[in-house]
Length: 160
Image (cartoon, rainbow, N blue to C red; front, side, top):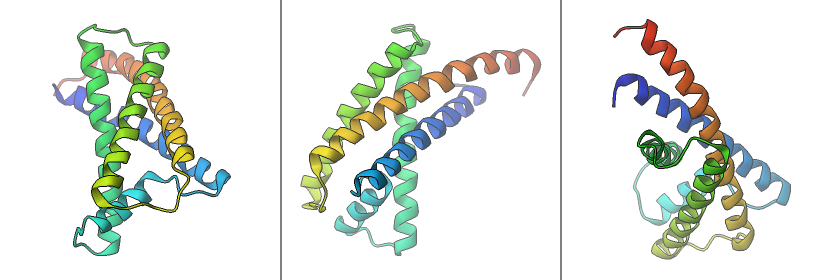
């Protein structure tokens, strides 16, 4: 992976994770529920006895959230670059749906592992999480597609 592709994947993952997170924050506000993944990750770190100051724990939670988004985007990239599936909105929707299922299973595992049962509507949380990941997949697809075109131009005219 060259430096251009690495930065492309960083940009795609930041855009997609931010869009997903904005959706989760909006759903959280609309339904007056705690659907904010970084906040729940902070609580999870506390329950797992991660000994850091509160502010550092919150920062770590945000970094973990964006790192997981980056990992999803790397998987999407491998599938696209190897021409296993095309870069399309249908594939982005499917990736988002599958990422949502993985996310739901991950949260179920984390809640069980930490014995942390936040006072939230779990069905509502998991449903909004699925929708948020579909948004993630669609935004990742759009930004990846657009950035791939820009990357072709950059590689043609810029040398590193």
